[in-house]
Length: 100
Image (cartoon, rainbow, N blue to C red; front, side, top):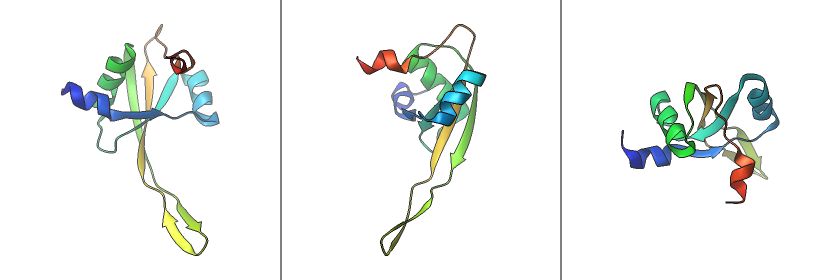
């Protein structure tokens, strides 16, 4: 796999109440990824960036919402979400990375 592509696949972690519950209950971490990323590319990118071992990857396409801005009708962009399960003993600490 192209190493340059691996650095572009993960856009950002998704931090919300739902993703925190998923992390506590199932040990999964949620990322926003580029729309054309595959499961194998996402797994390889997480292993490369965070130096952890990935057990499984599940993906979900999120449809953009219709929004109104005054009289103007608009639409948010569609995006792809990846649920990454890590092997036992591996974890990603986003709070420790914030100061770096």
